[in-house]
Length: 319
Ligand code: XMP
Image (cartoon, rainbow, N blue to C red; front, side, top):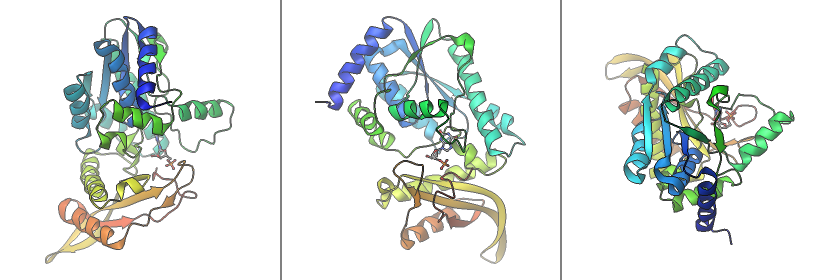
């Protein structure tokens, strides 16, 4: 019987056997897979694991603090937090092409991760939250079967000189198994059941050039949207929901005056495999409440629109 407890027990034994007394580093993103991998490896080898969490400034509201609270404070995992917002924003300045933005973000992540891990004495393992569908997908990519519309591989491979052995304890597991062992390992329900979040983060949810001002506005709008989806019970019926920042200004009216502010688009989709997706029919009263809150509470936004496009022909993300 494959209970979560049994999967954990076997994985812990295998990790201890493979790693012995050596040191392991892991790039923690706050996503489900790297989080569960971190908790599992920590259960197996404790302080031999060091996690590197790169805050690229493109995370959601308070996300960095939540990652630190969950891992460092609650689970006692060693986590190095790197505040790299300025480096990412500087590297992205002036760039508005989606694919080039992805490459810049992925490339800089590798560079920073490399810098940090070279400071960790005698690390010889690199842990990753690769799960079974990733293994299948990258096999498909090698044989040319995968149709890559966007370059989703967030980390373009680590530099040669790192020469680390790979530790991938989730390689044989499906997403639902990963989630159930995550809960069993004591990760918060909200973290384990979160919608997917792309590696380039808000970098591909701010259309065109990324600026701190835009990211700050988007974070606030997105947080209100997600909070309302939780409280109205829609969050877990939706496969993925998020706000998108549109760098265009439209005219509005407030009191006696005209406003000229940015637009936020709300996206919510239902999908089984993320290859095709339908837009989620959020009831009018929920849309009205969310739009009202965003416009009232977020300075810089005077218009909210709801995305009613399916995939295909639209993609889930706007970039
Ligand atoms: P699209 O927009 O291609 O998205 O319909 C399908 C799924 O992939 C996610 N996505 C990404 N994930 N890095 C990622 O890790 C990326 O660059 C990226 N682009 C899209 C998207 O959020 C959705 O779940």
